[in-house]
Picture 1 (cartoon, rainbow, N blue to C red):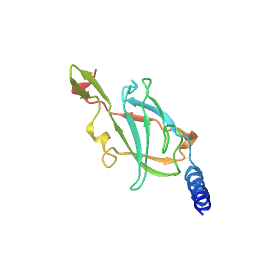
Picture 2: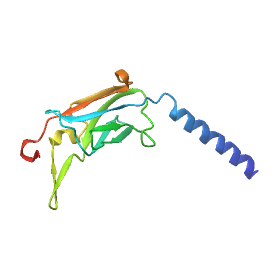
Picture 3: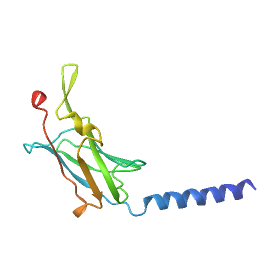
Picture 4: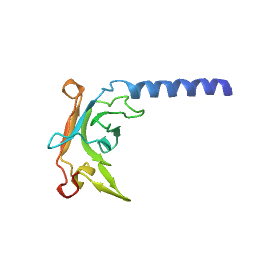
Amino acid sequence: MINKHCAVLFCLVAIILTGCDSGKKQISGKVTFSDGKPVTSGKIIFSTETFQANGTINPDGSYQMGSIGEKDGVPPGEYKVSVTGVGRLVGMTMLSLCDEKYMNPQTSGLTVTVPAPGNKYDIELDTHPKNYP
């Protein structure tokens, strides 16, 4: 009896995981400051009220989005976008290199519809003048 229950459970998990993966779109792009310089570190987050996907910003400003695993894509839909961890370490203090509004999806002013044209979504951030390198 236990083996039968395990088999049913395994099938249900396989169906759920397969269903969650279907339709994901690979989204990538580049995060730059308004002067064209790349954002060299941080995280980018796509979110809805019930879902969140994220990507790591690489030293050249590029990123790829993931929802369950890193870089596995994002389900279609409308997302608010936030960017966090954009900073520079000076001594023992991390200085933010961009406006704090970008850290909150409600105040960033950034949105994306997935799939994006060409599955690419580039982001331009205003710099925070007093902390800019």
